[in-house]
Length: 113
Length: 116
Image (cartoon, rainbow over all chains, first blue to last red; front, side, top):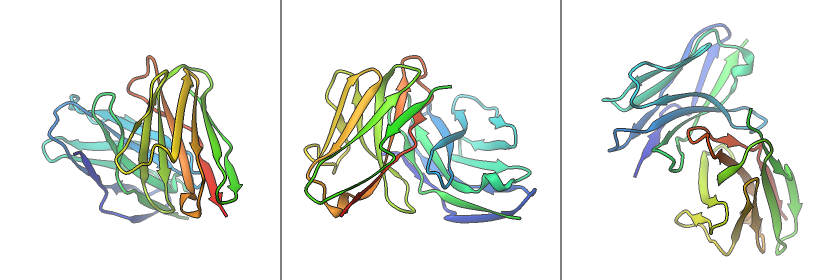
């Protein structure tokens, strides 16, 4: 079974600084998708960024970028120029094809003004 | 963009009663909807997957007679918590996948259930 591990229950960063959230996963598949979701206090799940495993190029969405290391099964999220609105729970997730999403345990990110 | 509406956003009920939560895709047809449960400060746990017009597939350990899921149309799935008890109190979230958007799931805003 696929598992997703987020080893950092909590992280904090100074406003305008850069922070990296870690995620590792376990799978025997070669083709799959990886995601980072943000869950602010409103509890609404918001897709931050996604990566297709067959793509070598790391995905980037404005201030958010990933470091995808397929061989190491690592998928970290870097947030640049952190803003107060980035404060949230961040979940890493894995999905093979159209199968279910498997979520990590989450990392609570605090932004220090 | 794709929008999923979940209703009610919060509900309080007495122990022993049943509660229905609706999940609607507002601007797309959702062939598949997923229901999750989230306990405080924990991750989302998939309860079941529902496909339009067929029976839901439940995850191991989820009581299908307790958590009734119906996906009668391409825009609506419902989760009914039957004979609710305090331990059923939780945050329930649905997500939907459209016909063409196979790689993207859209989440509802969630429903907080409190059973007294």
